[in-house]
Image (tube, rainbow over all chains, first blue to last red; front, side, top):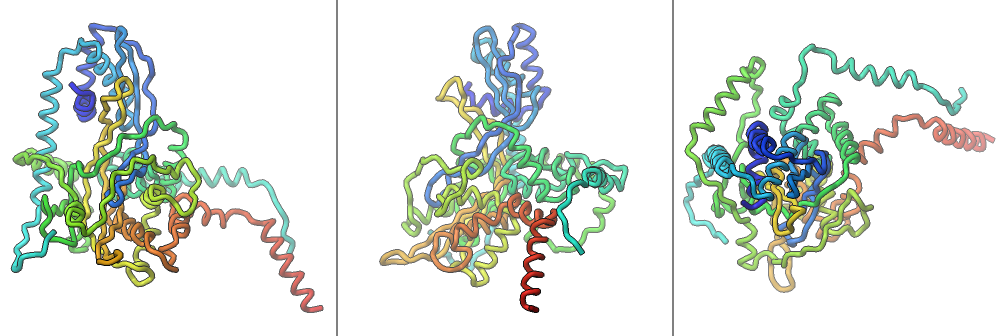
Amino acid sequence: MEKRRLSRILARAGKEQVRQLADEIKSAYSPVIVKAPEKSLTMIRMREPVQESLFYLGEVIVSEAIVDLEGAKGIAVLMGDDFDKVLDMAVIDAACNKGVFQRYDVLEQLEKEQTHRLERENAMFMQTMVNFQSMDSEVTP
Amino acid sequence: MAYVAVSGGEEAIEASIRLLEYYRSGTEKDLDLEVIEEKMSLLVDRVMSEAGLYSKTYAALALKQCEGSSDEAVFLLRAYRSTLKRSYDSLVADTRNMRLVRRISAAFKDIPGGQILGATYDYTHRLMNFELQQEDAPALCQKMLQEIEGQEPVEISPCGRVSDELKAEGLIDRFEPDDQEPFDVTQNLLEFPAPRSARLQTLSRADTGFISGLAYSVLRGFGQVHPTVGELRSGYLEIDVPYLEDPAESLWIGEILLTEVEVFNEADDKDQLKLACGYGAVMGRNENKAIAMAVLDHELNTTGDYPTQNDEFVLLHGDSLEMNGFISHLKLPHYVTFQSKLDAVRKTRRENHD
């Protein structure tokens, strides 16, 4: 599973859901904390559409943790200051890198639920789509 | 009466700081941070935007700490931010992929993807709702959760920009992607003429009232443009950082709520009329600030004598922390400098009388 997908599922998951996945790994292996969770900043780089140039919008607070699981490194970076969750995410990442993570079925189920939740919310916003009743045709691009 | 330099006042200052607690002690009810975050979200958005720091929880905490003063809250967040190191620059975030919650155009009624009103006060009657004095907050929360649960899922699909169509038609200039590293106003002293990246970053974190007033002056005639909002969109922008162990991979660290605006105005080319754009992007839901930013972005591309065409004037006077700090310093003791002024006035008067 791509790191972006893995981290998105875990970031959107509840703290307890992530903890359960990490606890299964911790019960079978002994991950060592390489970098204890700490807060730092990430600067957001954006591209503006007028001249297609880059600019900085501002910063977000992130928490970052690194663990070692029998020679395999695990890295997690997450917006916010939830140290427990980011450490658990790093453990899961290390297990994936080590090739010992078994619960991809749980991740896929979580992803499915997350997508459905967002799509149901999206449905509410799409109900505000304007249906124009026009008398003349518009000169459109 | 004599004016002299003085020192002291430490005990009075300490007592004054303690007295701030008194102003937050008028009720035994606590102000939960979650409540500020969820029910004062537009204020939280404004503070995050002006601080240049996206953290709803810390913005809520800052507002709680300073009795809801937006400029004090910005000060607190900026001060806290300065204690943290910066670990990452994000990968380039592309607003074309935003998960939209609102998208409108004042230029075209039919736009690809449609116009989505989302949540807006634009069409509300501005009448006080006295029922909110006795609101059943748990019932409201449950009602909305049930409403979401009852929805038939609708796939989320990104929308291209209105300006993309106009660019394809040649009505707006097209540029190749420019990957030059942006200027960072938090790390470097601004110089003029300011690079475009510095302009956008400065305007995005500027005081909402300041840039709204400046944009208003442009529209009233102290400027060159009366643009049309080609597109206004709010939504969630996904933020990624590089995965340090493998450059081919990235980590999804979360998403931020953002409002983005493009305005269009007529512009002269050498031999034909075309459209020029202004761009605004701000953290959170703050539409007027994003529109004002876009108006000023466009105005700063024009030349003339209006204040809003002077980038030093626009970019150096709208930072919430700097302007409020400087104005605030006027009330601090100036006993020595004022005595000097007074001496000069007295001396001149004496000389005139002699």
